[in-house]
Image 1 (cartoon, helix red, strand yellow):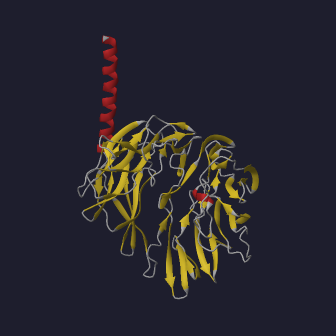
Image 2 (spheres, one colour):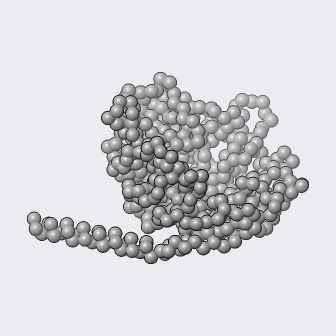
Image 3 (cartoon, one colour):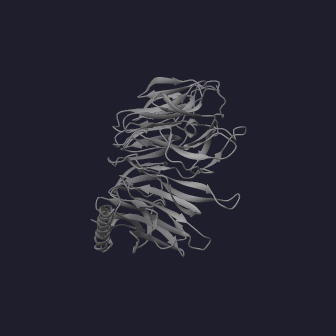
Length: 478
């Protein structure tokens, strides 16, 4: 027993020393803000048109001229069109993309190349991990008076690969070599990979909730049907199968449900009558690890009682059952797939009242009123989130590994965490004033924050606007 006690004391001392060392290293950072002029905006720039690359190196904005609008990227002006959208930069490559409207035609400008389309409105642009490929799914204004016309077009790298009755959002493989999406022919679903139909999913006779058509022009499949490439090239797919709404890993079914709940995020959640007691999946929640072949999602167990849980590749991640699911917040999974976090509603001692907890790897933190913005370090050993508690004017705090690390705020934004978990940054509001903090230190800055904060190399970086001046602000951390 003495030897065991000595071992415990020794381990505790090592952990304490490591904690003290980390605190000392953190205290050596003086958190001095360095600000420099990034660029100057002209008087005729369009409000809310500023955009920046993910590494805060490139910038763009829209200028309003008498003849129309034009985009300026890194100080170089483009052509004038009737209207220009805000620029979106591809990851890693920083290639600029934006929509233009000219002569009643909508075109996409992809890395300075104008590509005419038949889309009727601007659509989301999906990029490959290396930023060299891209895809768009959208409705085309066909002149045929046929309700069965194939009006949803899919563009990959600027070329139309097909038209379909409906199509899901596309996904790129982690090596960026392959692009996949689901399509509908009104009877069954097809998996399209690199422009070719490779598998057909045929609905069976099992009772299941309906496929909703909520947007007149479409596409509509993307809300309930999902396809995601996992890190090993496996496809995680949610669509209708023989046994109902089914999750497949490649073509192998791993879980089936009678109900697929529509909505989530900024969309109102819609459930279906006659399926109140059914096994269900919340399609919006389907999330994949970035560096490991795992997908997670919310599922409801069959029965009259609401019992929700998180599953990973079809298996429950812990024994916690929630009476509800976070409709505006997806569960999070670490890059290596080993750690999972989510907000859970747990029944309290007071009837008909449930408390919200931040659940990390089966461990509950709380209770809170609201949990927001969970994030992991790359290995998942450090995690952060914001949570509110109480009815006072300043209910929000930021937490690191379940412990508060900030002062109280009236409203908060998503926190950012470094890959090694040593630093956390956020912006928040209190008493009608905006704050930006790194590791709990409120930092001084001028103007309005228009980008960030984020961590780039060895710095915390954010961009502010003071009148027509745009400033790049940074704090050295390493």
